[in-house]
Image 1 (cartoon, protein in one colour):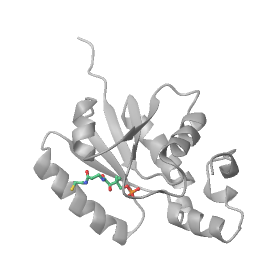
Image 2 (cartoon, protein in one colour):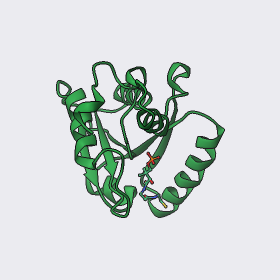
Image 3 (tube, helix red, strand yellow):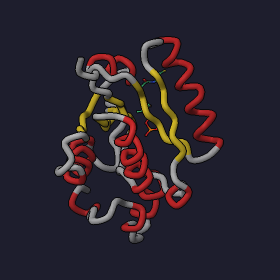
Length: 159
Ligand code: PNS
């Protein structure tokens, strides 16, 4: 019998997608057949990049890799993950602050969706200092952010 396709949802704001996110996607692709990068839309909050621009940036990055899909969703991540037949939720952990937040979120998700596994991956040390909020702050002060972004990404195209 053919093995069931393993799909993981990597949900986040991705405002913007960074080298840290990229490292996690790469690692997740070793474990799963499909990685769905799911951009959570907060209708109350206009981001730095529009959700459509965030999606475009990530789609262009993975244009040659059919194992990666990029979607925008609203509402609870667990509901979305079950709708698309995913078996797990992926999140990255850089430090203890992330860990505490992720632990609480994973516990809530386990209570709500016992059939979904939350998988926490440690962000590689070389990129563990990178965050989307740092990128946004540096851009606001007119600084160059290329080293925080996946190779070849020109942020100006999406602003
Ligand atoms: O990049 P972020 O800001 O860490 O992403 C957070 C996101 C969008 C993944 C998170 O806020 C989320 O999952 N929101 C949807 C609501 C939800 O499912 N919460 C968890 C159960 S209470």
